[in-house]
Image (cartoon, rainbow, N blue to C red):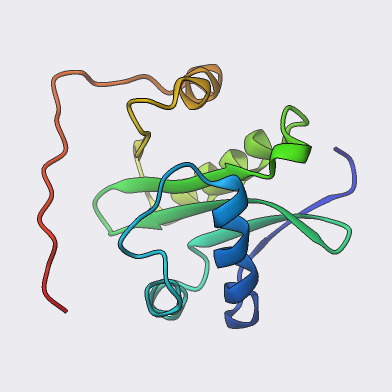
Length: 141
């Protein structure tokens, strides 16, 4: 897609991003609310990367770097715009960001049941590490 624009989200984009995830993202997260996304953008203004086609939001990825590891979340492409290179462009931007920050390896959170995402991540050069299991604990806020 030649007229695709990749850029960091601003606070003005957050309502559109939250609405977009309801259409394009698989699953939900405890942080999928205005407060959670505001906190992300305030803490790391370049972490939430958007793909736009004209005035339309067509893709997102969160490229978080904590100084130790590079984490990818919320890679999502609007269903009407899939298979056009948008996810590839978003991942390229995220990986370039990680390299600039000194990152050495990126990992992605991918739902076990999301087979189409598994194929996309595999095509992008990512692979599962079956020896690891994610352990979570909700924190009182």
